Image (cartoon, rainbow, N blue to C red; front, side):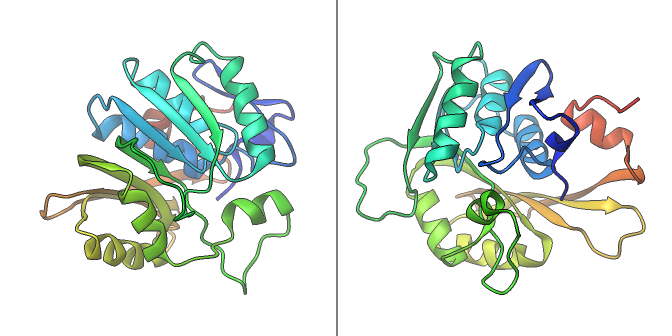
Length: 244
């Protein structure tokens, strides 16, 4: 999906939060905005939140704004991302509630006693055969391991009653759901994202997992009425300002 930040060369503004951007780091995109806005509508008052693969820090700061009593830990394996996320957090009013550190969530050698009520991730999904051209996007979106390995690494950081929320390509959603099921986590809610109403299939799926086995609530959202004109549903969910 498109990068929301491409319309401003310096920073992306979400409800008064300025996210400064850098060509060395994957830009703020529709995926992250949708995930952060959706999560804040379906999860209630998580105390500890992990933003796994924070990039510019967008999701971490969305969570800080939406959950004013929470503490957020933002991690990324990319040094440029950590530098930019730290800059954004330090320039915000959330710096006391967000910590930023360089970490590879997939590194099995890391031992931790920190567990989270909510984990969000916009995981990589490109394969070896279909790679983006920008190096920053390649690092952020090139999947090097299986969905099962990602799920294992993420759910191992959850509290017993914790929630995992992901944004993934629609055509890969079943693989992520099966991988989560294998670890004892089940799809609670799913939002399928269409670019336009006439599209035959959604582009993305937002997935909410928890340990409760239940029939998932499934809904859909359309981003555009026409080219570059957002639907009111999208604007209402995300809080994005309509373009003049």
